[in-house]
Image 1 (cartoon, rainbow, N blue to C red):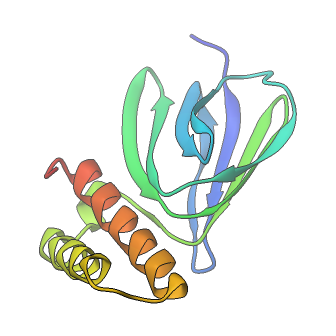
Image 2: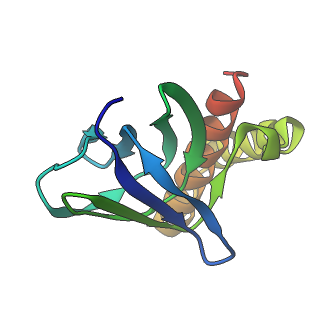
Length: 134
């Protein structure tokens, strides 16, 4: 069996995941990052997008929104605003959110509205990608 490390994913509402895993791949503002046991310790921002978790030789996928990840040699903790498994994603709601965000981005809007709309679009696209509807 491959070397494992403890992974915890925590949102304000719940402990989303806790267990020993072999690998994690997620999105950061600088691009995708993979974590294995004994990774160099660090703290990094987490970006909106899918997370892939390898546990017991099988891959699981979920979607995360913004947050932070603390990596230690034998434990990684991800604090994120939201985390969802594919079965928790409402495809119709995500598609409607995507459409609304795209429409807002087409109009002349303030910089704050632009940032919020871009984030809403990224969340919707990530949900649809994890759900396999992109």
